[in-house]
Length: 329
Image (cartoon, rainbow, N blue to C red; front, side, top):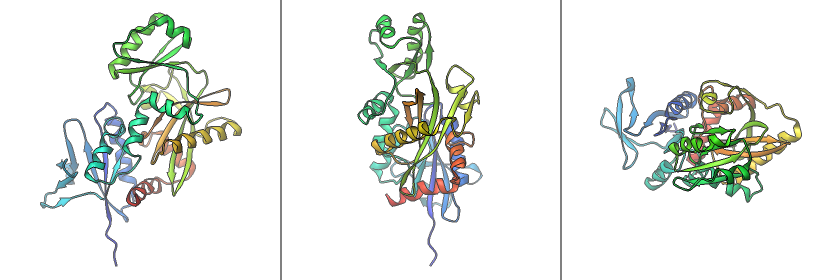
């Protein structure tokens, strides 16, 4: 008896500036999935259109009622699994997951609650502090609130980081060294989000930690040291190569074990599933969490595929594992 192959839609794109990176990530997953096991398709979700990419890159509109598509031969195609690799909204903040749950569509990665929670830096760090996971001291502001610069600097010292609370790709982040620069920095951050965080500066090594659940076990794929040539790991450093990434990070065994333990604890405490990448600053051997990404970059230049290569898991197995977990949900 021949088993029929499962149909997998690699869903890429998104509504934010990160969609460009997502298209590259999607291409790598599309190329990596095992064609002996799956029929693999591409679906692109953008602000203005949701479409299925047919032969010769012909676009077919996705029916949003049940996430199906009508092909050339007038056949209706539904997908057994959607492989979600959208960075930013709506695929990394829970919106797409909630919609898929509502129409009964199976998908990879974490559920809508974990997506929405982790997309909100303040709430993630607040929840994780209950599990003993340290983070920088911070102050949270909503748009329109009065900003008392003296009070902020007195509480956090200088320099500080000013960040949008919900935004991917390090857009809208500034490092502020002088009190006089603080207000301008908050205005830049408020362009990206109505809520911002001002964080005390942690002087240490930045590491990026890939954590996944693979074959029933939570594993740390790798710890990558980020050596920025810029002031910090900003958009340019992330995507235009203005940083050096060293895998594995140059840390001693005791620190490595501590980072692995805390990264796994964060992942399991939040009930995560699928790919994740957390950023920490190591100061005096203690990892302070900055944020967790639930749909991290997966283009060939991205950190997670680099870590998998190092760990010895092929991209075919890594991606196949995600599909199988989704099918068994």
